[in-house]
Image (cartoon, rainbow, N blue to C red; front, top):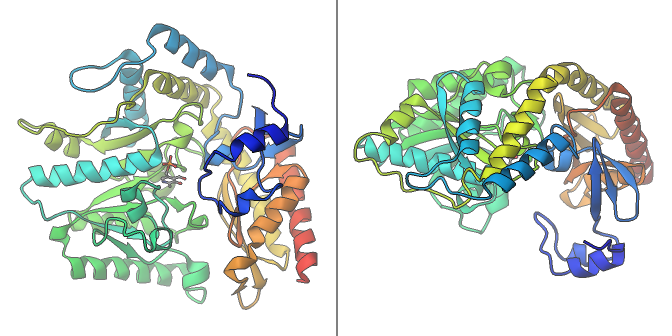
Amino acid sequence: MNKLTTDEILTKDSHLIQSFANLHALKQDDARTAIVAAEGAYVTDSEGNRLIDGIGGLWCVNVGHGRHEIIDAITQQLNTLDYYSTFYNFTHPAAAQLAEKVASLAPGHLNNVYFGNSGSVANDTAVRMLHHYNNLKGRPQKKQILSRMGAYHGSTHMAMALTTPAYAEGWGAVEGLVHHLKAPHKYREAPEMTDAEFLAVLEQDMLDAIARIGAENICAFFAEPIQGAGGVITAPPGYHKRMREITRAHDIMYVADEVVTAWGRLGHMFASEDAYDCVPDIITTAKGLTSGYQPLSATIISDEIYDVISGPDAMFLHGMTYSGHPAAAAAGLANIAILESEDIPGRVQTTGKLFEGLLRGLEDVDMVGEVRGSHFMMGIEFVKNKDTREEFPADAMVGSLVAKEAQKRGLIARALGNILILSPTLIMDDAMIHQIEATLRESIGKVSADLGI
Ligand SMILES: Cc1ncc(COP(=O)(O)O)c(C=O)c1O
C-alpha cells in the first residue's frame, strides 16, 4: 500500500464511521489521530510521532505490537488452511488445539469453548446458551438476567442491554430482560462506609432483586471482575466470592466477563479464581486472547451446562461464519505461547504492581479524586473538589483535556468523561512505567493549572 499523508488519510477517513465517538466533533480538522505503525509498547502516528500505547490498542495488545511469532503463525495458517467453518460436523486443527488450550487454562470445570469474534458476541452467546439450557431443562421462564450499573458488556443489542443503562437510553435494548444492581463503586455510592458495610449493602441489593424477580425467573448474573469501560470500578474485597455464593444458593449462573481482565492484565491468565477466588459457570473473554492480532472471543462454559446443551435431541442453533476462524485460532495459540514462555502474567505481578503503585501516587494532586484499578488496568477520576468529591460537570471532559496533553507529551491515554483510563501493553520495563507516571503528572498539572484548581 502506498504511504498516505495525514491529509490524504483524513480525507478518505471522512467515509469511515468511528466507534463510540462524537461523530460531529470528529469533523474538525485536528480531532482524529491516524496510527500508521506499531512496535513493542509504542505506536507511530501519521505525523511520525512515536507514542507510548498507554491503552494497549483497546485494552487488548497484551504481548505488545509487532510480534513476529504471531504474525508468522497467522501467515503459516493461511497458507495451509485459509478458511473452514466449525459449522455442522466440521472442525479444523487450529480451533481444536486452541479450544483444548483455553480449557486447560480456565478454572476447574470450565472445559468447553465456543469461539466468536468479539467480546459482545461472547456475551450474547452466553445468554443464548443459558436460555437454551433452561429451555432444555423444562423451565423456559428462567431467562431474566442480573447485571450491574456501571457495567460494559459490549455493543450488540443484547450485550448493550447488559451494559449500564446510560449507554442504551432510548434505544429500547431488549427491554425488560435485564435488571441492573447497584454499581460496586464505594467512592461514589458509599464513601462514608467501610468496605465490609458496603459489601453488606451490595449483598442485600442482590438478595432484594432475587426476591423481587424470583430466582425461578433468573438465569444469570453477569459481572466483570473489574468494571472497565464503566470507569475501572473495583468492588470491595470479597465481593465476587460472596456474589458467587448467593447466586449458587439461588440456582443462578455466574457469568464472569473477562474480556479485559484475562490473559495477564491482572497478573493471571484468568482473574476470576486466581485474583478473586470465584469460579464462575461461564467466562467470556476476547481482546488479550489474541492480543488483538485477530478478532477472536471465547465463551467458556462449565461441564454442567455443556452436558445439558449436548444432550440427546438438543440441537444447538447458534453460529457465526467466522467462529473459530483458522487465522484467529492460530493467532490465539501463538499469543498464549508467548504469554506462557515469557511468563507475562508472572511479570505483571511485579511490573503491574509498580504501575498501580506509581499511578496511585497521583492522588496527591488536588484535581485527582481517586485512582483505582489493579495492575495494568487503571482509572484516574478527576474532581473539582477533592474533599467534597464534587464532580466536574459531565461536559467538562477533563479526561479528554488530560489525554490531549498526554498525547502532546508522547503518551496515548483514554478519556472517559472526567476519568482517564490506562491499560497499556504488558511488556513495559520499569523505566517506561516511570515515564508514564511522569507524563501523566505533568499533563494533569497543566490541565489543573489551566482550570485554576
Ligand atoms: C468487559 C467487556 N466486555 C465486553 C466488551 C465488548 O467487546 P468487543 O468490543 O470485542 O465486542 C468489552 C469491550 O471493551 C469489555 O470491556
